[in-house]
Image (cartoon, rainbow, N blue to C red):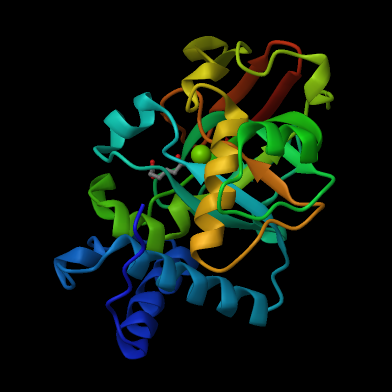
Length: 267
Ligand code: 0L1
Ligand code: MG
């Protein structure tokens, strides 16, 4: 991915105002490229970095990162062809088995992901799947609740990157395992909504191996002049397509070898 930056500070601040207000007010906005048609993916990351700077200034604590759009199913669902990354903060974390409010979200969807907790930091470029596995403390099952702030999920990559990869909430749980003890490539996952199977898949859907998505994330961070610190919680991307949820829905994500993660949604 070549990272071109074309927007000036004023435009970045204006676009960040829009995304921040839409996230905090839980309303949908048109995609940013309607007004800035020449906006690049690099510009999207410049807006995302400004959003992260503002959240941290407001007291949010960054706990890690997420890779997004890492499976063919998600790329097809969303009409894009390149993965993305976003940051995760303490304000997005929700406990396992909890009730998650939807009134502060626009149109939430859930997806099953493998999360990695790093014992060593990683720095790109050139980070590989093996580097990731060597630096991983343990993996655990997670559900990401994404919430694109764009009307009707109509967006392109620069817009979705600026919106922090649609990040909204996440829930980790189940059973932590050492990566050497399981075959991370062939983990089966079943997502149930209200007791019925909503979608299922296998972890190889994520770029062939979930650790590959973490390596990609580290290499994108390098293009932004950043690295992945030890202790980070990193989500590797949805294994299946994302499933819409509304108040009253309950979700159980069952992962082979890793146990299950559940939550319900309320008004
Ligand atoms: O986590 C992700 O795969 C990012 C998704 C971004 C697009 C969407 O809102 O589905
Ligand atoms: Mg995701």
